[in-house]
Amino acid sequence: MSLSRTSLRTSLIAAGCAALMAFGAGTASAATQVSWTGATPAANGNLFLHNSTITNDGGLFARTKIWSATGAQVPAFDIAARARLFKSGIICQVVEFTYNTDWASQLEISTDGANCGTGSYNSHGYVRTYDNSAGYRDYFTFPTNPIDFVAPAARSAAPEGEAPAVESFTVDGQTFGPADPAKPDTEQPTFVAAYTDSGEQGFIRSADLITEPVDRSAAEQLQKDGSGQAHTPSRQISVYSEDGATQIGVLSTL
Image (cartoon, rainbow, N blue to C red; front, side, top):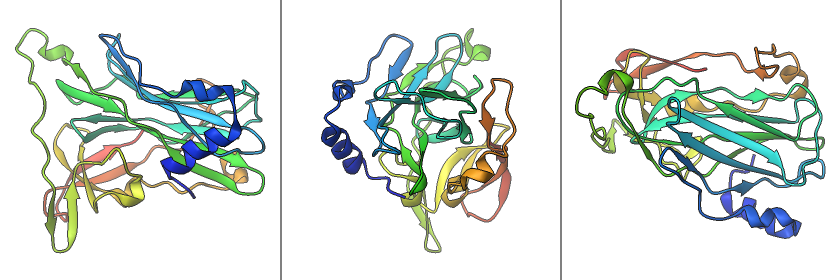
């Protein structure tokens, strides 16, 4: 499973597709940041593009989008995406992989609007494509620039400002630190900073973030959600204190 951004860019250039024009600085407004656009290697002859978005327009949402570079529609369960929301490098929300369940040319997945308090937020996620010869392959999106968000309960008070930076450290040979947006989950510290469902900051095992691609028959058994998409079941990821052993809560995925 290749996760190299270099290979993604190379694939896009080699394709000679007009979609190359999609590369460029992320767009922005007072409320929204959109990441650079990346590309996947061809899957069943189709080239896909992807990006991440963070917005505080009408709430706080992190989104991940994948779409066909040519606008071609692909069969059900050929594409999937997962979104993730970060506050100052600390994981706030994680959405599990969600698949298209009908012919589609694009798919966009979003967090549910919840937040981890006032602060600076950004977004980067994953996309998944299906190839008849290679099966499912995962690629991580470029991160967005951050935006500031004031939690509704704090709007009448002074903003909390950005959360204190999480320092990297090592305990008994295990590394701890914030998630690095330039690296896939397989190359993160042993434990990455995350919030519990109740808002306490701790650390989760980076290995617990990894969801290996399932085979197609297993994906097709997933239940459709209210939007007509097939959603990987939610789960609870244990969150630990700085010793990496004492559990302080859980992070429930969406």
